[in-house]
Length: 397
Image (cartoon, rainbow, N blue to C red; front, side, top):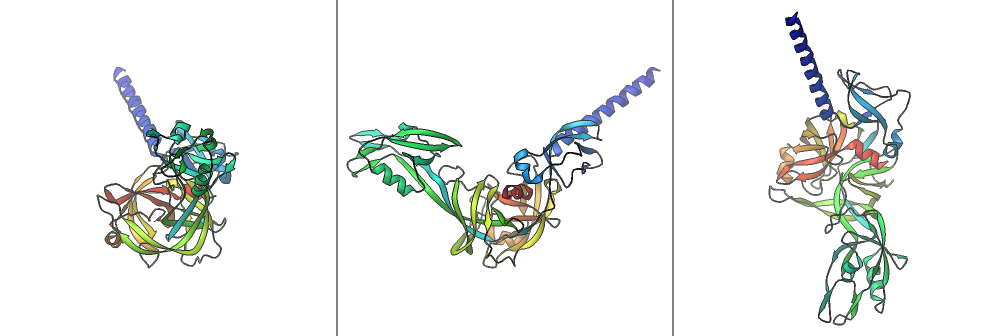
């Protein structure tokens, strides 16, 4: 009898250990947000299930607002593993580009990119810092007048007799009213506020896809940030223009290379959203779509380690297909969802791996668009990060 009890206790302990191992594995291996094609699709595999009310539907189009439907990931439909957010997704098909394009952005307000001490009568002062203005602030208005250009800011601040100005700034989404008094610098014959501001920026990137059903475009896979502050630039108005690749500087382990392009006057779209997972806007109806390829957008859980392809432009021949490999997947990171390694010797010979300007390069796997390249990994230009295409599709809508 005692032997039987010992065997039974051992079997129970082994079963508990196995179950516990599966729970730990499921908690680590599966994402916190899971996409399904319909509300009754709740079987992930032979072991794990999603438990939620089939009678409640999840509105995919408003998923960004409502956050999907709460659910539980369970082992064999019985043992809870962790909480999930479930979103339903249509089988969306987009036109994939991979073409380079030029970016022209104008800020919604004027960004403070630096402050500087001013010498007055042998004394050093900094009016902007004393007023509480900080690098990264967006100057929205001065004395109630909305400002959109650095020239206008200079005109207003220089047109005074030492009086105070009411400066409204946007600091990380919070609006502040500050009082600024410029000082007169006799040697220069003008008033100084002790700050540098910027109202526009330009760059190049790669178009990821165009959605013909909505007219929306998605690109870059990462935000456009100010070169001095590192802050995401709030867009007032933006243009996407056609470019021609003129040269490529190859990446090395010590320095990231880049693509150089010549900007044309042909606008291919307008840009209106700058986010941590890319820039978005409307494509022009005049753009020739004959070179685009149609792909279904893969759900995040469909992405696998292993062989993939990218479509990118690194010379005058336009978008070309190159081989690559997904080496790591992180389902629960908002921005760095995967690591991709360039394996195509043709591309390595031209670029040394991933270079600046390839951001937004579409990643294809198993006949579907799975994501876009976003950043090169420092000291290893053959590798870079990627963001899920499903995330970009949601943000584009």
